[in-house]
Image (cartoon, rainbow, N blue to C red; front, top):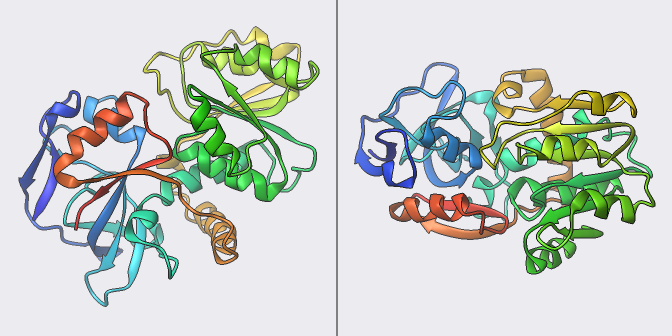
Length: 317
């Protein structure tokens, strides 16, 4: 079968379309004919060899997909650690979910990572049931997880602040429900949060930039606020002087979907709520661009340059 293979660790240039052995499911797995795959920053890190637990190359890329069960043809969207960007893949039965009736394969492939991550960010922040009057700062708000977090925040009634490098992107996310956009190229977001909240700060920050931004995000929270760290898009080691936490009783929490996905009760609880919102038509993946699998290098490059809006999707079949 055809697959996108990471031939060695490096940039997009290490990606090659190759013929690989067919996938074969274990008893607890489903075999899926893949139609589309969602590209995530974790896929960039995997190609570079910077993602925890990555096997040695060569290996098939991708962790998020949509397609049809090989047996029966049921439409599913799923999450796996590796090997999603291929004509067929296997997925644990607990990590495959039904595709909403009117969605395309591209929309379905853009759902699992973004919306489960955003949901768990609100969960870690303690805001799923106590959202009234809460404020959240969402970094990279125009990206895949960012646009998902805005949609969930709108449902929860949260006052949302978001950072991006583009006024156009901020305007588009504003249409999804973002109330306060901050162009970090024009304003320091720490000062902007201080000004916009009359010096109070926000209840939580969704942080995936790394480097100095972990410490800067702590400066944005109010008393007992939480910074939820789920990535390091800058590629820089997170910097945090823990003395910053003392004065506010603030805290920093890690969020890693690869780890949480192994917790079956937690994933089932998240899906129960997400599926209710889906059934009510309240959630819809935002897709910025779709690339054929043959142009995977261009898709990875676009993500690497941070120029995408919403989700980048690979069309596989």
